[in-house]
Amino acid sequence: MYQSLKPDAAAPQPSAVPLRAVEGTPAATAPKRPGPNPLAGITPFMIIGWVRRFWIVVVVLAVLGALAGYAAGTLIPPRYTSYSDILLDPNDLQLVADDLYTRVAQGEAQLIDVESKMRILSSISVLGRVVDQLDLTQDPEFVDADNASASADDKRIAAVRTLGDRVRVSREERSYVVTTSVWANTPEKSAAITDAVVNAFLIELAAVESDGARNASDALNQRLAELRNDAAKAEGAVVDYRREHGLPATGDGQLSTQTAVQINTQVDTARETLIAAEARYAALTSGTGGGSQESETLSKLRTEYATAKQKADALAATLGPRHPSLATARAEQTALQGEIDQEVSRIVEAARIDLQRARDVFDQLSNAAGTQLGSVFSDEQAQLELRQLERTATSTVAIYEAYLTRAQQVAERSQLNTSKVRVISPAMAPIARSYPPRTALLAAGGLVGGLLAGLALAAGLGFLQYLFLTTRPRPAAPPRMRAA
Image (cartoon, rainbow, N blue to C red; front, side, top):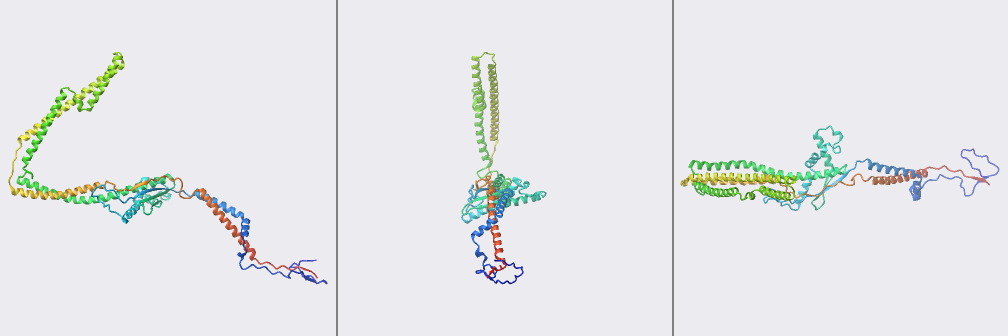
């Protein structure tokens, strides 16, 4: 009979029958020690078993990951980004022959010009225009609630900074096309801000050239004040010399002779005008109907009168003399006749006034021609000194007029926009948000991430349990004895 001995039991008394150990069973079993590397005994089936043992952890983490992704897609404020493409052609238009700005920009200089314009696109001046235009200082998206009680300048600065963080300007390599993007919390606002930024950039770009031309014009105007005084002094010296020496003649001859020739020419012109006025007045007073050729109103009234008369005659042939339609047509005909008479009277009166004026002008010029006297001065020395003064005055005035013309050209140049910058892709409201990704995608990503984390945690828990079981020391088992 076999009997197991408990470790804490008293040793039995020796009996007559001796006991011996069972064959194949050692007298005492030593504690089993793990190998030098516990990982050597791990197999894929063991890992699968660990995962199956802690499957609840995997499911919980997967569900939590999906919920976290869904919450992120729902709670994170969305960002909608709109884009606009602008062609920054560095070769500006040349509207005038001698423009204020040179147009010889090649190679690296063109790229520098494009990069400079890109910097203007995101400058504070452009952003400030957008803030003022769209009144972003009152938009809580650009001004925090903490700054609601701040001053107007502080709000504007905060809005400009916020807008600057949202504007992105980029350019593809070996291209003059620049892409501007702005993001906002709504698609419509994003597109509106992008268009406002582009429009403000175009205005600012035109203002840069305009300011440069205006500064040049101001510098020229300052010099013009001095040149104007010099020209006035030179011309005044000529006039004073003429007055002192009694030299009213011009360089082409005596003044009296030139005046007589001019008056005679004017008399001839006045005589021709008088003859034409008399002929016109005679034609109008003769009743030949020439007024219709001078007055479109009279021609139109006569046409309407002919139509009304034809209508009245037609009604008279078919209706009685007291019929209302016929009476109306007769009244219309009478009214048109009155208007024709008034228009004819007006034309005749105007022709009479023109005739009287022509006669007065002719009489005055005839009297002036009859009373005009001329005298010739022969003082050669005075003429020589006068010509010298005239040459000085002419030179001074020519310089002044050249500066004046250039100043006016530069001033007009400031009103022209010669830039070839063109918007090739206006901003459009985006269909989908740019950040965060779609809620379904975030939920799927959270599900996958939670699932992987759950698998890793389950495998880790199984591995820890495996290490605990394999490294724990086991007590020695007592031998089983049998009778000899």
